[in-house]
Image (cartoon, rainbow, N blue to C red; front, side, top):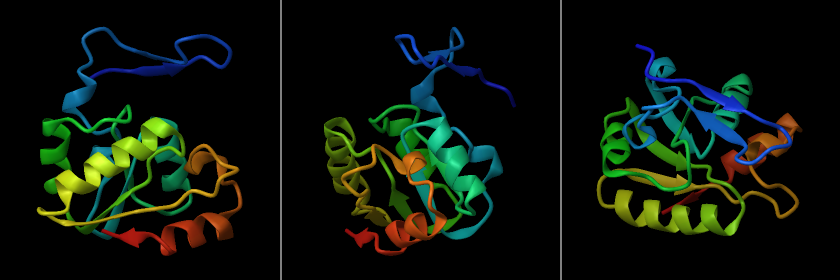
Length: 141
């Protein structure tokens, strides 16, 4: 079911535009493509999720750094053993990772990745072997 659209502007602010009425806090981008997996990655942005999908990793996006209660419930309902937080490598992403780890850790198996300093997010990691290494060396909470 279509709930809204997203467009991205390269050189303008805000960078992302969402359709009027889209309640980002009530959806996970990409959830309609999720099938049972050992782990599912969670990103901030839709393009990060699409990149991980292209690289063979099942992923959903929060459409922002912070996880709402509704998104938490959706994550806990995913057909997986582990949730891997792949949030951005900036202060907002690091803060959101800490909050999400704390909230989810008593309810499921949750881990997080450490994005190398030279990258802002998973989409910036264009070398598949390096991306694989980052995800494989995730830190279990």
